[in-house]
Image 1: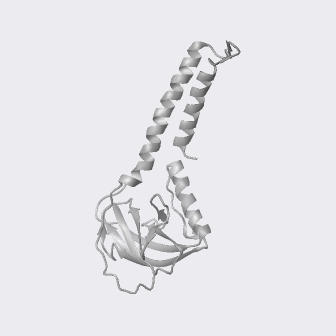
Image 2: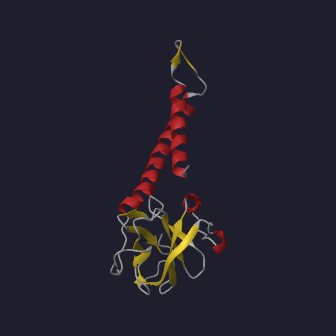
Image 3: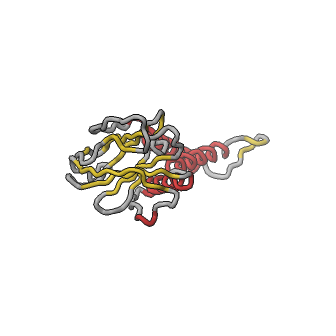
Length: 212
């Protein structure tokens, strides 16, 4: 459960408690707290609802309005026989947020995950609201967010995953967002149900450190 949801729940409980204390039961109120405390509790609950609702909306709308640059794009060779990155392309200088796109054989039913590997040699799974890369009609895509220095080299790596490995990456991202800390994964941390299927190297066009 996210921090925003916890704040909303606490705010609701405080308001309900302040209201319940003045509800008459058999012509008498509960009278568990004095009027000043009841008013203060109700106001605090109301403020928590406003703050929690604003925070929740900001977090959940971010992905809907988020804009990403589209880099150079390879010409797709048909029939598609393997999972492949088609944008950006090998050696390209990319901006801080790009739409990584690719193709896959339509018979491929596995989840696809993009992981970034910057100069610290750790792995950072990328996701939108669906967590896994969006797949449809033989093409896939995911917003890829870079954080680093200008000209820093990154590897963009695509993995096919089984359900357990896909859940591992989803849980990892949720935990990182909850703690506001993104420490990266070591190679040995990657789940056994993930298989690398493509990889390219790019560099950063701008200084992206601290952008996200």
